[in-house]
Length: 287
Image (cartoon, rainbow, N blue to C red):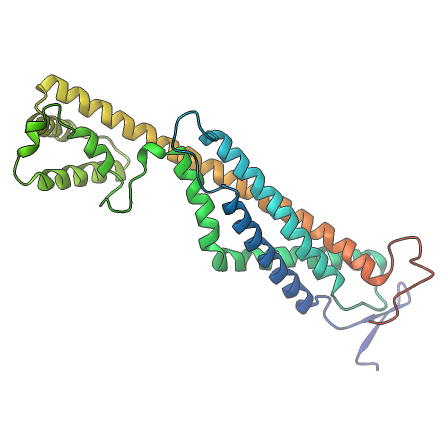
């Protein structure tokens, strides 16, 4: 008995030497939070949080879509984290001989640990469902830059704009795919490095466009400039969409941590019978 208990001479209380963390309760709360998160992700996908209408004046705009998805992230984090934290606090082992303030801290810590475990495991287990919503958010803001699955590169759509002929007879050139792939590689390399087309590449692209489409050299140069500017605009939209999505996710994580800790405190109080009007008259005696 002397090895199992430690006497605190300052407050004259007996405190157990066992760990203050009930890991089974923490893991149970984390698993429940993960399961509910997956359910809410599937529900969000079913409600259309992964798509934006491709038709003008139909459905929600990309900005409204981003805000709606961000708010849904926060609501989802609040619900799932609160459930996980509540279970972690309610299912933990009762601590005997521990001060009320210490019990309150441990319950809060259990909720935070349940949230942390769910966040770490969710980053691995729920990566695919989450990426579907994230991909829908970014794609909604960059519809002009999106390429179909059959295309070799996201830059192919811009090359299509470059080589669209005004004279249909210009399509009869031999091996047009070689020219297309060459321009795709040129665009991809230039914008992957975060730069613009250099003057030599821009002049060459204008010559290819002129020969392929039948446009004059001046019109071909104007088309090249217009497409390059469109690429820059769409890439900037994608960058801003990714930043806004990251901010929404960060905010939802902070709110989720708070909700988990608060719910764990509530669950722990109900577990020990310290909440409610009948807390003293009906104490919980089983550990």
